[in-house]
Length: 470
Image (tube, rainbow, N blue to C red; front, top):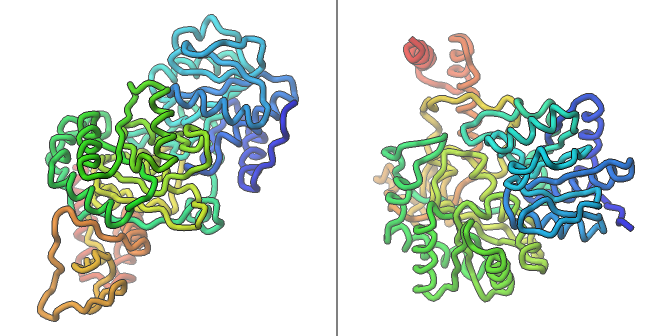
């Protein structure tokens, strides 16, 4: 007999809104941040559908997510089978946990479900996913997608696959309510990605690895992990398998137990590594594109444990990918401590993805693409003693260091991490967003007046835009 799932208020609201939307629409997307229990919501939706006699299929894009989902179903005594080449089938069950690779090969030979739940639904624009989803939609199957970041790598939305989206409160609200952990972020002074080419909306990995896989950068990563995250359960994100292996070897050589995992690592080995991380035997797991989405350390390790620190060593143009990686550390800690995010990739500042807690507007239309126009922002100062980032002032508000009067700018030292001032970053991004939304010269002039900009600023911005579109 299944166990009744008690949802949190925000989870129950999302499920109810999705159920109401399905009465009108065939496909609905639920957006909710990493760590807020989307699989639990999916389990509740499964139970509701089963009570009406409906068959439900839950689809995932990685093999280890098959067992994580099965673990959640098992916790709620939900009967299930698998549609996956690596698992034993149970065709009599009304619920199936499905691997997309198997579905792509067998979709026309399989019976039709009544409802499909799609995990990490931002992947659904890939060719294989699109084919499977189209097949179901053409035959009247209802679909519910789940994603923390409902946006493609290139910024395009998911409106081609979903008719309606249910959005959650922002990450800041979840932190305030205690559903997610607060965090402290440190960012490097600079990483030069200006010469690295892009393909498919993100940096070319081979070029990126050549730039970032250097002993000096690796040494900084070890140094600052020891300074800010010594002893914390940590997960690191690397550019390539070779880069991840180099980082793992460097940490081990420094006396810090580390392991490397990637998509080719056998499932049993991944589970064993997770158990060693949970027990403290291993301090950091380095990976490549493996733990950015859907990874639940507790489920993998079979015990209640959280990721306390994320080490980002992979620059990316994808805000969605960046948020997925940072979100690994935001599950609440037993002692109430902050998560630590070490942004060695400069994604927060240089790639302008901002901070995890910023309020973001998600839309099925996605975001407009194109080169970001640079505008002068409020200057910031970097303390050379504690690396705190703050508004210009004679004294560091963090460590109270008094700047010498003759020094106009704080010297930057490549590789050092500085604590990110959340309010400052959010303010700068909001100002850029406001300018971007101003379409006419009077609107730009109004911004200039409010901010006290020099005469001619609005005309300069307006004329520059017109020249760019000629």
